[in-house]
Image 1 (cartoon, rainbow, N blue to C red):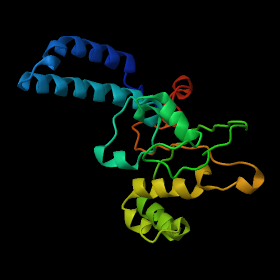
Image 2: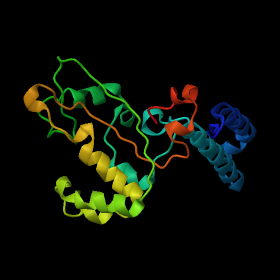
Image 3: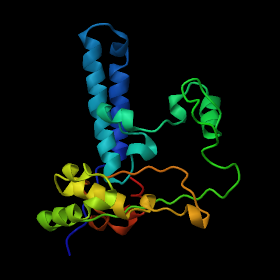
Image 4: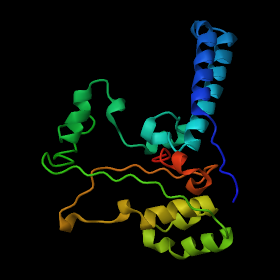
Length: 208
């Protein structure tokens, strides 16, 4: 039996980030190239921390420790952090009207009702990329979007579509008394799957 691979230490990465922040703090207030250098040094170490955290199964949208691709920002839903006044976000959730969101005439969610949440992590290993991509392509019409098949370029993009087709968020249960209350998903290539880690580490690796 092969030895379990130990993920990078997030604690050590955090301490190094703290050291870099203290070292570069004064330069961040400057108005010359020293500031850009300091910003880059902080960004690189922050990325190292994000990578270490990801190896342990955390990060991304769940913890906000990672940064988004600027090209993806327009696709992200509005959240509490997008408003200066928390009451504005609550107004949207409760169906109130903001100047630019007057079309929301009724609450998105009922005030009453048990709030349920499901979080999980399932890892897979691609053993035959060609067969896997072909399988997902054969099911692309289930997405009811003619353009989605063009997005299946490799195993990773095929996996993202498969998660959409078979995932809990793609199902409808309204007629059975269960309505969606919002959802976030994360798909990524990870260095370690759960079964690469020892049992103790697995307990701390979801959601990522």
